[in-house]
Image (cartoon, rainbow, N blue to C red; front, side, top):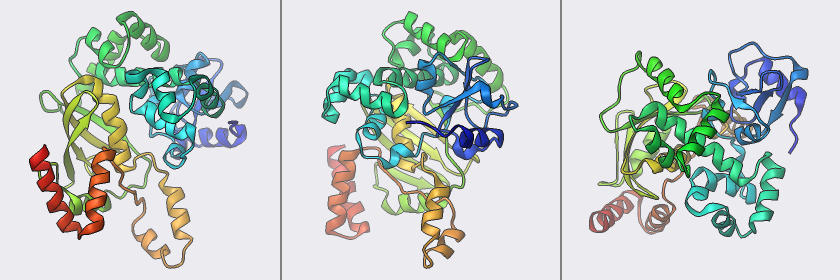
Amino acid sequence: MLLDHDACYRAVAAKDARFDGQFVTAVRTTGIYCRPSCPVPPPRSRNVEFLRTAAAAQTAGYRACRRCLPDAVPGSPEWNLRADAAGRAMRLIADGVVERDGVPGLASRLGYSPRQLGRILTSEVGAGPLALARAQRAHTARILVETTPLGLADVAFAAGFGSVRQFNDTVRTVYGVPPSQLRAEAARRSRTREPGPPGALVLRLPYRSPFDPHGLLDHLAARAVDGVEAVTGGTYRRTLRLPHGPAVVALDLTARAGAVVATLRASDPRDVGPAVSRLRRLLDLDADPLAVDAVLGADAALAPLVAATPGIRLAGTVDPAETAVRTVLGQQVSVAAARTAAARLAAVHG
C-alpha cells in the first residue's frame, strides 16, 4: 500500500508525533530509519522513502535509529480497526504466534496458505510474516537487554531466536551495534532513573496524546474482579495468563506523560512480548485519539462531552476466554452481581 510522499514529508518536517507508528522514514544516505518525530534535523525530501512498518524498513536494509527508537512507538491504529487478514495477522504476530507455531500455524489460524498470507502481508505492509516476526523479536530482545540482568544467551532464547548467533546478527542488523553495546548504553541512561522492584521489569507503554487515564481507571475499577484485578489510585493491577505461564502486572496510568508505566513480573521471559501486546490492547494504547474525537465531536449531542474529556479510549481485553465468560455473566445480571459471580469462579478455578 503506497504512502503519499509529500504528506509524509510534511509530517516529518513538522516532527509531528501523531504520525509515530503510522509509518517510518527511511533515509537512503545514512541507511537509517526513524519515527516521524525524530529530533534530528529532517533529511532532504529526495533522500527519503516512507514505509509502513519497521519490518519493511529492515527488509529493505535499513537499521533503526538509536536516538528515536522507531520500533518502540505506538502501533498503527489501522490494525485496531481492520478485521481483514492483514489486520488479524498483525495482531497475532505481535502476540508471538509465529514464535510459538511458525508461519504455517499463523496461516492456519487465519484460514490461508502460508504462501497466500505472505503475499497479502507483503502487499499491505511491505514485509512477510517472517520479517514482521523478526522485527518483533528484535524489539523484545532490546527490551530484555536493556531492562533485565539476564545473560545475553538467555535473552536470545527468551526473545524467540533459534541461536545466539542469530540473535547477535539480528541485533547488529537492526540497531547497528552488538547486544553488549545496547546494554552498556542502557546502563549509562539508567543511572538517572529510579530502579524498579527486584525481579520485575519496568516497561514504558507509549501512547498518542491526548489520553484520558481517569476514564479508563473508572471503567476498570467498576468491573474489577476480586482476586484477579484491583485499582488503587492511578494504578491498575491484575493477573495474566500468558502462553508460557502466569504473570502479574501493575499499570500506572498517571505517573508519566506520554506512556503508561508497566511493572511486570512474568514467570517466563518469553512472555514479555505477548504481555506487552495484550496490555496495549487492554488500554487501547494504539488508538488515534484525535481521529476518534473528531468523529465523536461531529455529533452535536456528543461534542460538549468530547471537548470536556479528550482522549477517550475503549478498554479491550488481555484474555478472550475470560472476556467471553464475563460478557455472558454481564448479560444476565447487573455489573456488580457479575463481578461477584466472576470472583467466585476465580476463587474456585484459579
